[in-house]
Image (cartoon, rainbow, N blue to C red; front, side, top):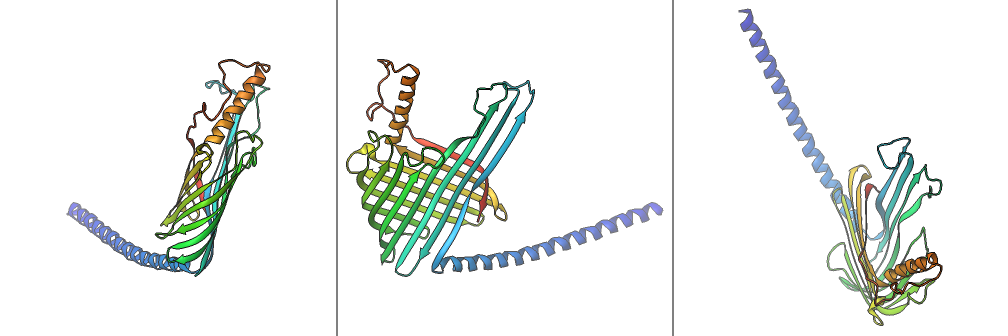
Length: 320
């Protein structure tokens, strides 16, 4: 009898627990539905805010840092060392949209520093050295002549900040039209554009007249921010003076403004490829006392391969 009573109490306790658990699940579902409804209202209000004419400011990017130090760690090739990495990417924007005109300003900054100090080698470089060095800023002004079409003027400047500032530096200035076929997509076509190039080596870098094409698509999908920007210059004087850069940035918000960020940059620039090869050539000459190796040809546009330039960045991101 006692055993039957014990079993009965256990079944009753289990039933009570199950009933309570189901009630909690039901309450959670009700709360989640209410939260989803409030989030939908907040998203709708944000769309109205974004559509309201006036200045809009924002930025998202990636920040990261790591530092390590080893002492007498004999299992590795360099048992005594200190290393570090610092990365910063920022994609800010300031946009003004009025009934008759617009003014869009954007920038892309990607900087990083690395160091590896072998404590057993007193001759090595123990300081932080630049690794990534990208700086682009664009300003586009347009006067609307149709719903999705505007007469526009563009100024774009590209260079490096940490090392070789403005050597080279590129300034594009031109006029043409801007097309906005869908929301968040901007296509700039300027058949009249001058590409000013600033550099110490004028024998390689040349300014020229040409056409400028810029395409930018930026959008937020909930917690995901995405921005893609293609900037291309096509020289009318020489194809070797043409260049293009395509930068894609993604950030995913994990908590408040903190998330994960990834950036991919691609570039094609024959002038930069020849200039880099020429600097290496000069270095070999200096190390050989100025003696020219007959098999070592001086770099020119004809004998240098124009390899695709690529950079990637991944780390923690912060959205403003």
